[in-house]
Length: 151
Length: 411
Image: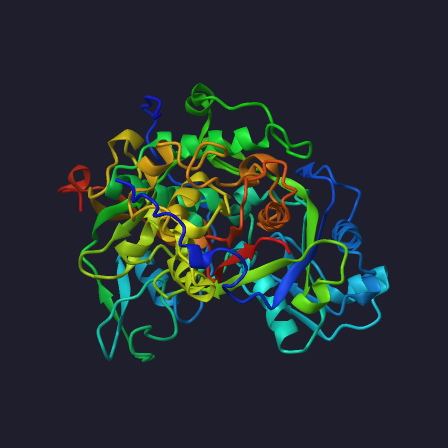
């Protein structure tokens, strides 16, 4: 049962989040650092994929076009996580999102600054970027209406 | 609602169907310990004890082992590993002619017996052991993904705080609830019925009856999942010995024939909850449907012919989704099916995890399900299903391969 809570969901504190990258994933993170959400799209057959990988799983091409997305997303499914190792009071809403302008690709992220009980499947989200270790930015999501006009 | 089972077809009774060219002839285990409490014993020691116990059960000398068929890449959990050369040196095994592992993780547990069979049928080995040992003093598996070093692929999941396998599967469970109206009461019934099966088992880690109230009062870990949706964190080891059906007939125990064995899966499931890109019809599933179809085809049976189902129960929703994938009920009907009492030992239509599973007995990454399958088919199980002739044992659900095994009544 969902205990009533007014604690808003957050992310793991940014300084605890470390990422690494390779030549295939680096464009994603470099765009995020510029507050742009991008996804790799096959240069041959136009199939989107995430996470970025060396080959298109549909046609095996290695050609990639990095497409800048609108930043809109919808909640495909989510969890409400109570505590994280070393941070027992943390409330996280890890979310799997569909990206309307990158059909077939999903991103795993967080919904932030929202009461967990307000999150529902199908909810519209908008991307934001949260600082993490080593100067990188992590794409996270907020309910679409709460960031309206903020960009 | 749930599809009623037709009565067993008479031509499928007895020992006429399926592979039946190899048999499980020995099972052995260490005591089960709460996580970390097997220290100062080592992985090699725990595994060695299980192997020797399995040999004793079979009436074989450990010197007769000539094959090793592992799963999970021969790792012992995520943080330790097993090694055939260590076992040869410490146990005095003179020569091996086959040593191999299924890839990925616990999804291959049941399928490792198929790997043993492959070695035996190919003539590469004659007496093949499958072993898993687990010790969780360094890292709890429950939050293992929060502790692994970041890499380019997990950098797309680790930051979200999905810290362990159960956290990942909570997202699948939520989707199942959304699509099909599945209720937490169904997950609770899986936890409660499994606990009830553990009540009379001396080695079970948790035997105290669990009530619906206990379940709904429990700490939420990753909503919609609570503490009782998560399996135990156990230390210990289990080993299983497979040999040819001919050799098996001369050994101490009645041979438990392998009727079907399969591992693998489809790309749409793929890395599963480590990916989350599964198309909708696969997302809220256990990824085991292709395995079910292959097993039933090999065995010449269907779900209605299975007498006891030993389903890999790391997390309750995955039991529910396996009931669907293995055809015990229709897709999306797992919730009402479970809530109807269908999986209860003694009163249900398909008793599930009669040994108390990983939820209540012990978690040795799928091996206890194989042991229970063997005991059910020998007719020696503590919670014996009367007249059981076919036992289903599954591995996973996790990144591919997932796997399954059908065992036949011992003869």
